Length: 355
Image 1 (cartoon, rainbow, N blue to C red):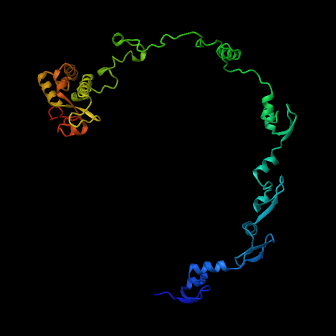
Image 2 (image 1 turned 135 degrees about the vertical axis):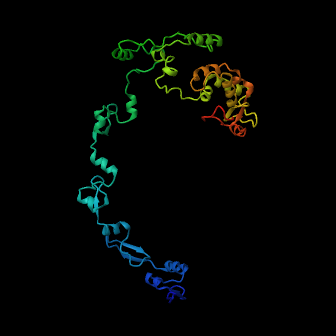
Image 3 (image 1 turned 180 degrees about the horizontal axis):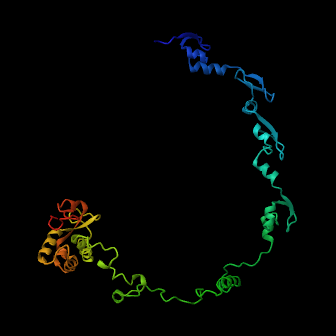
């Protein structure tokens, strides 16, 4: 269904144009925006009288009642005109504030002037009058009218740091320390004193440091570390009957960490295939599970479940485990391409499996 259209004459150019019923209700009078702007420009300036303040004002708008937004707000929003107590200026507030005895001041400045009562005083230097707040007078201030007069007054001697004076010999500092602790501290600076390590670097040689570490091994200098050596293995409170697999136990030994470090140092911490220096691994050319299988064959008189501790002690002296020539530095990506990556690791059949 097509909408009905009506024909209207434009008030500006006198052309006939079609309009929908909705636009007639809204009050469409012009065929285009250009005609509307031309009509507004040609409008004559008319003078009106404001219904609120009863002043004359001139506009091009037809039927305007108020000269400004303030006058319109006073009539439509129930606003009241008040006179400031301090500066006696007229200002507008809402009717609700007027009922609650609020809105006596036009601004924050007038509020501070009206509420805070300042006291008139005479300057102690020049004798000029000035005002001061009661709170400042309580604190001992409000004696001088300006900074110039304050600077003219002679001050007390400075009690802080003074060149050529000893800090700890100052009477005020002595009083404080004697009141708190009863003694002047021994750490007070003494003139002409030189510390024993001034200008010295690397006092102890590497040989002397090694001797010191060897002499202190096995000694306990605190009660917390006295019984640590006894709480190992079966004597530990968290012992669960030797659940750890033999494969995992050997890999966590200090000898295994030293072997891994030696391989990295030999290859300068770089992958031997792609040259990467991050995320590097120590790869076994002959797989660890095969070496473990040969190790258990050699010591078949011991079971890998019941005699784990004895097998671990023997593994520390088994040379194929710690042979550097069997190791190779590879990055994670190159290590995955070998085909033996993580085979037999953390599994029940780690002894017999490949990798």
